[in-house]
Each structure stands twice: as C-alpha cells, then as structure tokens.
Length: 419
Image (cartoon, rainbow, N blue to C red; front, side):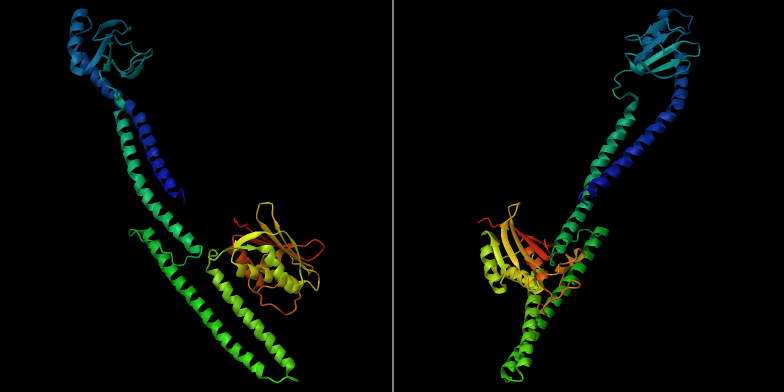
C-alpha cells in the first residue's frame, strides 16, 4: 500500500511510453514510401524550374540563386557523376554512393538533408535553413504531450491512493484497540464507499464490544451479590457436623470471587494499550514479598522497573502460585537479574511434570490447561493469561521453557526503569 500510487503512476507512464514507441515504429516504417513519392514529385518541379543540363553554368547558377531564397534552403546541383555544377551558400556533399532515387539522407558535416534525383540524371541536394528540430518536430510535440499528461496524472493517482493510505492508517489504529476511530469519507467513488463500509462495521463492532463489557460487568456484579449472601449464610451455620460443608462452601465462594476478579482484570487489560499509572518498583523486593507466601526460593540483584505495582504484584503471585500448584511439593525457585540486552529478566522455575513443546504457547490462553497435568484443584484458569497481558502492557515478553533436570521455567523480560 505504501507504494501503490507509484505502481499505478508508473504503469500509466509505461503505457504512454509503449504508445510512443509504437507510434515511432509506425512512422519509421511508413515514412520512407511517403517521403520517396513526395520527393519524386518535388524533383520533377525543381527540374522544371531549372534550365536544361546543356545550358551554361552561369545560367544554372543564376537559377539556383533565385530559387534558394524561395524555398529557404541551401541548394547544390551536381552532375550524374557527382561533379559540382552550381550552389547557394556552402556546397553540400554529393549523394552517398549507391544512391539511385530521391530521399532523405544523413550527409557528413551537414546532417539530415533532402537528396533529389532529377529526371535528366542530375542531383539536387537541399538543406533547410534554421531547422533546429528538422523532421522531428512531431517527436518534440509528442514528448511535450507525454510530459504534460504525466504531470497531470500524478495528482489524480496520488489523491486516490492517498485516501487508501489514510484508510489503512485508521484500520491499523482500529486493530490496535481504538474502537472509536473512524475514516473521513472523501468523494463519492468506490474508495469513499469502502470508507463508509468500514465506519459502519466499526460502529457496530464498538457497540457490540461495549455491550459485551457492560454485560460482563453486570454479570460480575450480580454474581457477587449472591456470594455475599452465601458468606452470611455460612457465618450462620453451626459448627460441628456442618463444619465440612462450611469449609467447602468457603472454598467455592473464594474460587468464584477470584474468578470474577480475574475476569474483570482481564477485561480491563484488554482495553489498555499501555499502563497509565507507573511507578519505579524494585522487582526483587516485590518478588521476595510474594515468595514468602509460597515458600519459594529467591535470588538475584535489585532491579528497578517502571510499572503499576498492583499489576506487577499480580504477575509475580500468579507465576509463583502456578509453580507451586504444579510442582508436586518440589522446590520453586525465582530470580531477578539483568539480562544481556540491558533489561530485567525474571525467572520462576518448578519441578513439575513440565509442559509439552506444542502447548507452551497455548497455556497462556484463558482457561486452557495442558494435557496430562495434575493440579491441587486451585486456580480459575486465567492466571497465565493475565501474566501475558500484564507483561505485554509493560512492554515486555514472557515465554515457557523446559527446566534442566525436569520441570518448567518461565522467563519474563521487562524493560528497566530509567530512574
């Protein structure tokens, strides 16, 4: 798209050049016969205007001096053997060897000239005075026409493709998450119709996404109301034989509450292109706080990153809890180091069953669980999806790798803080 206007414009110029070449070829192919017939007629007229060959040369010279100004040309008369008989101005060279008929010839030191074979065998060589363009005036005119057409066509082609480029820019912005973007409808042609169709589709999609978000928020709100009532009912339950039921209800409510919170957070992150609230955060200190909740080992050096402390804490908590959940009571190790590119590298490793290579990207999808994995029953299936969202909103990346000796290793790369 970036060079579409050049492609259209060059295609137009190519067609024009092809037309000129075809016309030139046709002219060169057809002109010889036309020129020859015309020159033979002119030769007959010149022969009638000149005295016969047997008259004295002085009379022939006088006739040439009289005829040359009338035709605005230098004239030279030569005999059938090429001998000079008369001339006006500097004598012109004789006809090239082998010439038998009238025609235009290129003569040394003279250029393009007309060579006329008179009926009596004499030759008249004519060269027009002040003919800068000579017989190529038509070519100059054609070139001027082509240049004018090319200059005039450029703004037309550019205006069409310019609108397409503006449409592409708006589509890119729409695809990046700005659902309010619209395209200005310019003109009444197909490009304008395309812009109008895009605006209609974008408007419908924006309404659909807004309605979905409102429905999600409303559903989450409605879910929390019965959860609150369930909590109240649990508090009213008696202890004793009903203690097990109370504990189970408490776990279920906690899981539902966590699910609602993470769905709302995922929905909010979907609408963000970047983090608005940023602070300088010591990632190692934050990791140490969260690791104490899961008894994970921590090592590394203090590294500052710029971001939202709440989201970064959520990122660390999800990675550590995911590692604990699948580690089969094995050790969980986490570290914060400076990577080779100058950024911050966060790693979380476990001794779980590991993730198959073909699923290491899919585990970051919402509610996806790797095949053959065992877990403690905790979690709502959004932890790693939120990890990727949070990392990307902070300008970083995350990947899942196998851990040496068995298990899984998560690597998070984040840009370092400038402070």
